[in-house]
Structure formats: structure tokens, C-alpha cells
Length: 235
Image (cartoon, rainbow, N blue to C red):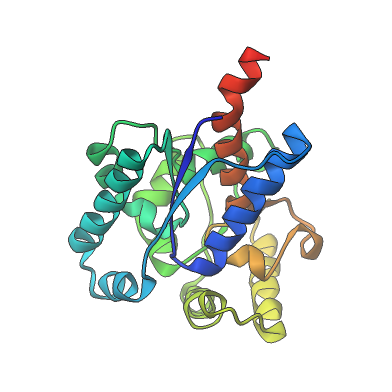
């Protein structure tokens, strides 16, 4: 099994989900007492969130590049960045390391391409919804994602940072997300991308009639496919 290197902590609420799903996935695929071979570097999110808010992406990139190098030196055979927003700095990780980087937007786009959805709604932080680093990556696969309007984007972003990243799951916020999805469906959305790794803590496919693409779950499955590929071939 290839060792999976996780850059986490942004926030740790969703990183904990990554760790659980990776281990559950290995057990489901391999059985018995099998579990994931993982190295986790969980970063302190507070200074990174400040860098995001100030637009100091250069400093944030330095932090991620250093984390990736540390994981590679520790023996990681691939790098998984457990946050959608910080994929804005994916090139800083790939230029700092030699091991494969499993890009979350690519994983998500491939899953959407396997479905009938072509105009999914993207729910994420403002950075991810408003900048091209993620939307452009999806577009390269032929996925023209929709985003909520300005007021809705503010609410989606606020709920992520003020509630989900702090372990707060509020019924009123769930209702707000579902109303935003319903509005997008009326405008032609044919799917929903949970484009922040915390959003899956609030809503799931069970809550939505449209196809839901949970980026955390998709990322985990891609990491498992990669990590277990050599073992599967040997078998």
C-alpha cells in the first residue's frame, strides 16, 4: 500500500472525516484488520485563515510547500490536500515535491463527467466560488459550474467559517443551503458540488434531489485507488 500524505487542519473538522473515510475504505476493500497507511500533517488553521482574508497567498503557499516537503521526506508516496480552497496554491505543492499530487478539482470533474450533470452548482468558500483557480479547472473538463448570487455566496462562506469549521451544525444554516440549491435548480442547475470539505458535515445526497458531488468523499476514493493500485496489481 502506498503511504498517503495528508495536508490537513483546514479545518480539522473535515480532516477528521478524511482520516475516518480512508480507514473505512481500506477496511471495506481489504477486510480484516486492514487500515490506511497515512501520514498526516495537521496545520494550525488560524494563521492560514488570516492569510486568506488578507490575500497573502504567497505566505500561505510557503506553508503548504513546507508541509508537502515534510510529508515527502517522511515517506509519503502521494500528497492529498484536504481542502478545496487551498488548491489555489496547488502549484506550490507540485513544484516543491516529486511525488504525485491528487488534485481535488480534477477528481471532482472526472466524477461529474461520469454522470449526466454538466451545469452543477458550486457551493464553497468565496475564494473558490469567485476565483478561476477551481472553476477554470472544472471548465477544462467541460464542466461549466454555476455559482450562487452575491448574497447567497456571502451566506455560504459565512456558514463555513463561522459554523462548520468550528464544529457547529445549525438547522437554520442547513435550511439556507437547501434554499440556495432550490433556487439554483430553478435556474437550471443539474447537480451540486459540495466544494468545501466541511459542507458534507451539513448536507448530503439524502437532503437533495439533484446529484450531489461530495468532494471529500470523491477525494478519499481517488486516494484509495492510488494507494491500493500496486497491491491490486500484485494480487
